Image (cartoon, rainbow, N blue to C red; front, side, top):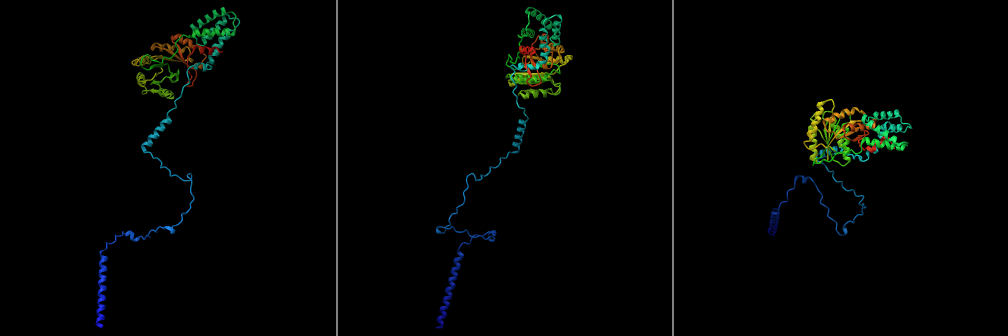
Length: 412
């Protein structure tokens, strides 16, 4: 019996041992788990919570809603410029800030009428003085001598004065009784005849050839020649002309800078050369540039020549000859200071011998009582006064109109 029990126990033990071997062999055949990185072994993370579904789901919370005005939109990133682009933009801004504003000159039509009050000194001494003398009840020889002195003092000139006095004597004798209105009309008529109303006083700014009109400005230093050239550029621009300036006054310091400043104010380009360079070369280049740009007018400012220096006067003739290689010179304008009176006529004679003067510009006419210089200089040169300067303002250069001038002299 004991033997049977022992056998049963041994059988059970054997069966258990076999079962363990089978289980262990099955476990060895399973794939090993993927290796865990060392860092992950140190981190202990909780498994993600399972979502609640059905009755276990939480109810949504009511949060306050914002209007569209309350929502802050994200700001756009600031645009950045490359260093080169930034420097170029800064340079352009500096050039625009430095560039002078282009001015629009006042119209030239009727400009002398608007400036007639500037002739008050000539009006007092010449116009009103003559009217006062002619209004005397008895015009004896002494009175006629006073009339003659008045005309000579106003720089009318000897020959024109004698002619005017003779005509006035004859007409006053025929007229008989003289009212103030009749005397004013008589004097106006005679002064107009003396100055001349049939002269061509227009500036020739249209070339007969397919090239710009060329205007040369000449004169002695101190007459305001370069300033007059700048003002003349404004006159031409005001009349609808495109202008190129030639700074051929290379001997006077800052003359080219002065002319360029005048040109920039009205959008006219200035052609200039080296200081103390050849004036003829600058004038030639200015006309060449004017042709290339299709400008209407090339305006050349020449050096102020002292009429006693023959070499410089000859050089002025050279400038004109060099410019004429491009085409004819349409105007040669002589600038004279009206305050110099008869002394200016000496200068005028010398200039007329070197270049063919076509017109006269009388400056500073507002600062003198010698308005009669208009008559004297026209008689001396045989060319008309085309422009008069009546102040220091940029638009105080006016086309000369005989009627407006005489009316300003004798008053209303």
